[in-house]
Image (cartoon, rainbow, N blue to C red; front, side, top):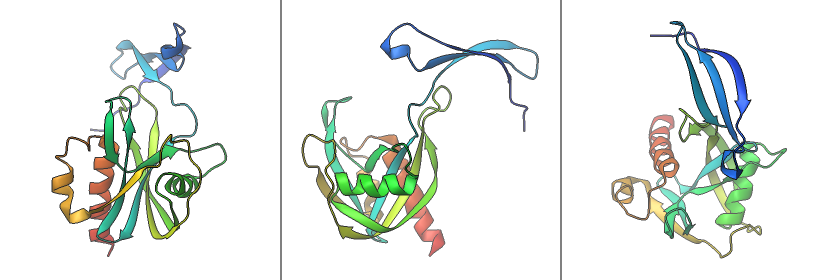
Length: 184
């Protein structure tokens, strides 16, 4: 069923402290006449990239880095912010050089991913990086990240690992695996 989007009567920025600086309150009216107030977290910056660096059509490069949110080392894909003036392709190539020590001669944006679209406006662009070559740029990580090659046909093992829990990385790998199968 296709529904008309709610009417936004007013958007108010909340101000209650540092954790609320990007929180907006929306005064909404739905097509059935119901009025509600929703809260959303407005994205900072220009979005982010999630990079799937392929050594070949069967092998991806993962990185292991410290994850403060869960206080452990986490295995995942190269990720990072899109800086002002950058395209997702440029940001993906830069992040790949900073985090994994590789550049890419070919980058393809597949789609955007959201994390919690019911209350966050943040988007990450899923980018496939191919035809890799060694090149390292200084990054903001406090230590060099471990680079781990992983076979795409072993995703069933990766998805159950305790140290591989980030949803965007998991979704991106399955999307890219299917994209490779259907685009070949």
